[in-house]
Length: 279
Image 1 (spheres, rainbow, N blue to C red):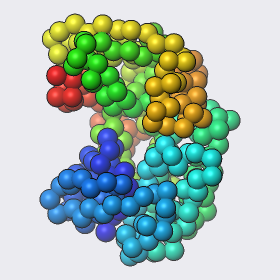
Image 2 (image 1 turned 30 degrees about the vertical axis):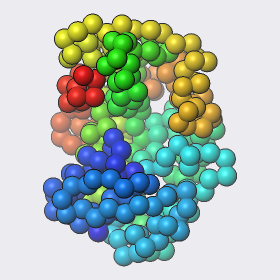
Image 3 (image 1 turned 60 degrees about the horizontal axis):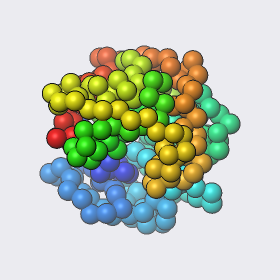
């Protein structure tokens, strides 16, 4: 049995599908009830209360661990989940971490995530760590404004990073869960090209076949919007990167291609697949 946390999100959903299609027994874990692929067991549990995962992890062979924003908040103890998995006999854990652990090691949330990585390395089970940069699917935050106003609003409109398709993250995660050759690997995951928010808006417009206006937010406006969903520390760490990415954050990593044997998908590929959200 492979346990997938965050199983209804942009990474967890395609990962669950990929594992099911590979013939694996999968338990999909999320906070709320949700539809899952045929043959997949769904369990509601809250990672902020690790003991709620104990019945799910007991006897599982592998775990995909995705930590939600509130598990970066002060006082959270995500390492308890790793301890619980090891105690339950889980033999392989794949952690979704962040590129910023390496590129911004002094950011508050990056320090916390590095502590989780270190705890994983010392926990006993085989492990792999995924460190993606910005997600292409962050553009879904614009879906309603594109549908209703034909507008994209974002900060730092002409500053780009190589955003990664979450399906690529999911496929790398599946490979790490299923193939022992990836044990002990730390994989930096990016898209194939640097793309700015303004260029992302243009790609959405091209796929829609209709104009999309770009409105540039101030940092303060962007932080106010982000802190509706994530802790202020995580918002600040993210904004620091997208305001002024350093050379490492602008680099195109070979790791997606190294693991999957194909080039990473572009933002335009992701938009084409996600058009229903913007229409």
